[in-house]
Length: 180
Image 1 (tube, rainbow, N blue to C red):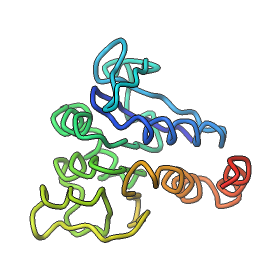
Image 2 (tube, rainbow, N blue to C red):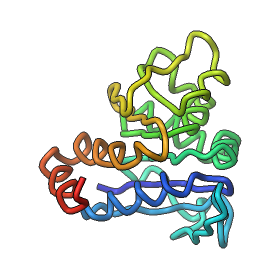
Image 3 (tube, one colour):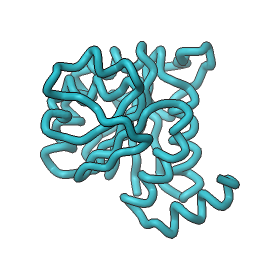
């Protein structure tokens, strides 16, 4: 599987790193695409360097598009024309999309959440319209959409992505290796 993980200044470092690392342990091809070139600073000051800038990838080449949260990063994902178009394209083609924490707001900006069962970080629902509200569950799968609540649920989110997109056996193997 080929997964695309866009990051921007203000992303939630635990969510991004746990997603990236867990999927790579499942032998997925994971590309971390920075919305800006160079070092990207996360919400709590951790600095990461992406594999490539967003403008040098073709989102259509990927099977899965996963958005880490963090409010600053989420705002950037919500306002980035390329990410928003990729989300709409993935949704139209029924390709896997995932978000964790506040990144549900980027899904909403792309018009993906209406009529869907999803979850997000508690409190984010206040920024969503009354007809688009989350459920209080750690990880939710609705069709080709996988969502989760936050940093503490990142392992369960990543393992659910592996289970749904690859196989439950692959997820169980990674889970055992992580001692979860």
